[in-house]
Image 1 (cartoon, rainbow, N blue to C red):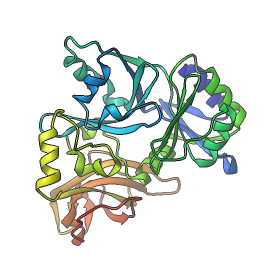
Image 2: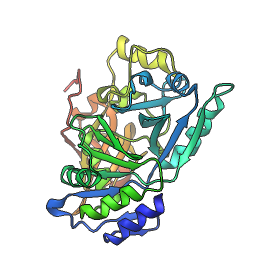
Image 3: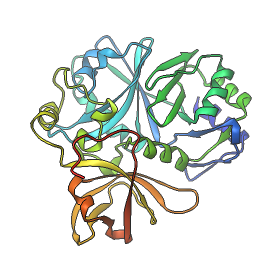
Image 4: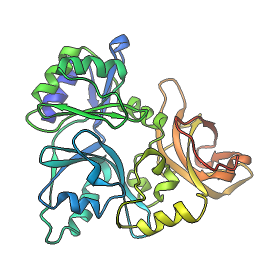
Length: 335
């Protein structure tokens, strides 16, 4: 499936170098798509799949009905995120997309708790695509479906899932079959192909920081604004770390939050951040980052809210951070 879609992307002019896609950047008014080669997709099936996922993840899996997707998180007992995911339901199973560099480890851990439950995880050989608005409209026409209008609304046709992500664009992925329908529609749509940085920049602009290996167990969901993006349901039953997450929500203000920033120097997930006047003291870290086409970098960082009064730097690359606007409000900020 992935090979067929990759061949189509190459026919459109994209190149894959050392596992990273380099785009043509020639979409123009026809729009852009970017292959998400740094993500992995799993299908979860079995009679007990819903109950199992409900007991492990932070969102209410029972609300998935084939028409809505959701962000969700998976934490350790201390409430620290091991991963966050996009989750949706279609037909006889659930589909889960998460960062590829930690996917096998996370799925292995989930399997440890299956025990006697009838649940099976299946790794899918497919290549998700992220599209901008013009590209999504052209591809939906080629697929013969109506593009979802609302955030997290889901549509699909013949084994191709289409999900509108909040503020980031539209995800399109072939989940069943050989990928022939999606590759054919992609070729017929004549949209441009962007690189991985383009996709990461859209996620940064959307305010959603994917947990990767470098940031595993670094953040409680609220530190990364997960509840503001609908990834945490506070009325569902228990799951690992639920007590810590609930306590932070109801018994005190979150002292660390996720912010969008600009840096003249390149940043990477896991890099430590400091206050301008105390460069030896860590007050947060980079959660997700994307290099910009011209120069510099945009990133999502988790830092102490009060630190903005003095200014924040990344001492390891000698760069000051400029705070940028997020597409959603952060409640109870001190400044």
